[in-house]
Amino acid sequence: GGAVDPCVEFACSVVCDVTNKNEIPLRVDGKCCPVCNGDWLSAKQDIVNSEYNAKADLVCEVLEGVTVTAVKWVRSDTNEDVLKKKRLYSVSADGLTLTVLKVQHDELGNYKCIVTANGGAQLEAEIELDHPPPANLISPTKKTVKFAYGRDVKFFANKLGPQILKTQWTCNGVKITKSTPGYKLSFGGKKIQMRIRNANANNVGRCVLDVEGFGSNDKATFDLQGGPLVITAEPVENEIKCRANRRCFLKFSAKAVAGTKVFKLKRSNVKICEWINGAAKSCRKVAWRCKPPQFCLAISTDKTSEYVAVVTKLGVTKTSSPLKVTIA
Image 1 (cartoon, rainbow, N blue to C red):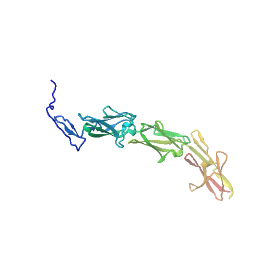
Image 2 (cartoon, helix red, strand yellow):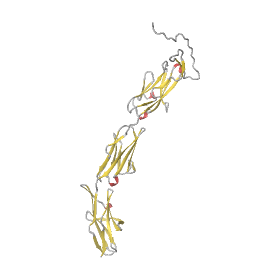
Image 3 (cartoon, helix red, strand yellow):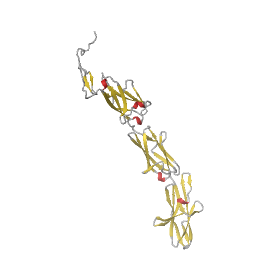
C-alpha cells in the first residue's frame, strides 16, 4: 500500500574513478543508479560579514546521501586547527557549522572546512569572515575651536567603534606626536584628544586628525581661532636729545592684555631696534628693565636717528612708533 521505489528492481554496480579519491557514488534525481560525484561539498556563503563582538556562523553543506565521517576546521593561512581555541570557537554536532563566539579583528580572514565522507573521500571548502567598515570611524565634537591666548585649549573626536588602529594629528601642515613640545595627546576611552599648552597665535589655523581602521580611513578637521591679544608699545617720549658719543637712554613702555588678563612681559619679549627706511634694523635685547612697564636701552651715537621697540608675546608682534634721537 505504500509508495514503491521504482529503482529497487535494478542491480546497480557503480565504481568511481580510483584516480580521483574525492568522487563518491551518489544517486541523482531521475536516475536509478548512483553516479560519481566529486563536488559534494560547498560553503553556504563564500563570504560572511559580521559586526564586531557578535557571533558568526560559518556553514559547510554536503549533498544528500553523503555520509560525513570527519570534519576539521582550520585557518587558511596557517592550517591551524581552530578548535584548539575553544574559548573563541564552537562547532555543531555534525561538525559542519563553525561558530565564532565573539568576532574581533584577529578572527577575520579565511577558514577551511575539511570534510571526510563515504569511503575516505575528502574535500574542502573555504569561507571568508569579514567585517564591513563603518561609514565613519570618528566624529568631531565641534569643528570650530575658540581659545584665549596663554591658556590651554583641548578638543577631541569621539570614537565610533573599537576598530581604530592608527591616529595622526597634523596642525598647520606639521605632524604632531607625543614628543612634540607644547602638545599632549591621549587615546583613551571613547575619545581621541589633543591639548595645546599655553596656546598662542602660532596655533591659530587648522588641525586635522587622520585615523586608520580595519579596511577604512577617516578624518576630522578642527579650525582653531585664538582670542584677541592686544599689545601696546610706545616711546615714553617721542623725541629726546643726546650729547654726541655719550651714553643716552631709550625708554619705551609696553603691555600685553587678553580680555581681563594682563601678561607679564620679560626682557626676552622686547627688542629695541634702529628704524631705517620703515624697517627695524640692528635689533638689540633690552639690557635691563626700567620702572615697570618701561624697557630701556643705553646707546651712544653721534648722529640723528630713530628707534622702535618690537614686542613679541604668544606669537603676536607689535612695533611701537619711532623715538627720534637728535644730537644736542
